[in-house]
Image (cartoon, rainbow, N blue to C red; front, side, top):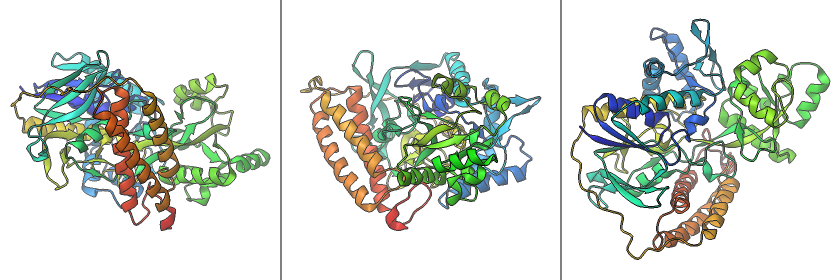
Length: 526
């Protein structure tokens, strides 16, 4: 019986834990806050996939849409693998108790930007929360899975110091309840820590999205890939709410239209439908239903040209009954702010949303080193991994699908090649380290980091801005490194250290790119 540590409690981590449990392995899930505090729980839209195995035409269309969204950089083999497995993995979710929305006996399917057909299963506008509910319930029923909340992974423990080829044998982690460091041995570690949206001032991500898993793997010798491609969601609500609230793309799939203030004025005066007044038509004939890279860039450029803080998403031309039935979570949040679907134009703006790049992995989810070989005992699944599925731009609602397919692939690979060789792991060395008494420098450094990424490594970039960002990141890295080597770890210090490292990988990858693709748009390359 092997012992596996899963870092992260989103769809990828929970699904993998259940697979490993079914095979008889002991699993410990490490999660930084509560199990539900994951990006999965915040996902509104749904999971794309073709349930009918015989629907070759439907699967081919899904593949084609994914490749088109990826702007030529998808790994077609991976795309086909994920789309072909979609039906089986969605049935696994159903077996685990996930309840997707139905119309009669059939699933109610929706359409989002970049999709040419309705192929997205959902649970109204709270799909992620429903998946998280079902999987968490299944995990809690297992006697072989231990859930450890309020536990922060800090660094991986190598079998041989500074030799990644020998692999991983455990994890150092910080108990956020006691403040104590602990070493946990493991036969394998599955990193499922999600993304790093907290790098930017405006993000749809939860507070836990600080790039922890990616950073600790890179420090242990793992390779990152395609880090320049970070997806900004075009429609985050900006109505005096303290934190951006995601307005699902499914709302535009149902006919919602993006307008600037002039377009909104013309629409109100015309008495006709709003589609022809959308500024997004200047960027794509698909208008508000173009892929996220195009729509986010259109919003960003229009806001910069007009000086506005937002654009508008209008839904008053749509059926009120269907809107309130299909989007109750959004309606509830809007009502708290004095707004309503089907009535008020909604102020929206782009916000950092999804890390398309990540740890370089193979088709079994094994983490690769710079030489292209797999690091023994280490897997990465979900948003933290770069599988090649998304290319330069993720197609809406493909992320939950990719996460569950690769959680299954990684789990199956370990089950078929399991190693039961738990080793002793060293305790965290704290000699000479002092408790961090002053957190003010960390707060200021985090503010500087977010300001730098927002201004210089955002939706539209330039070489001058990226080089400026790199200089600032080098300075921040040096300053935080000085604190790290003399201080006992705290959550704030660990997260800032990780965010700076991930930001550096994003910026360096962006600097090296010589053409604009998908989510990477450098105005010097136009």
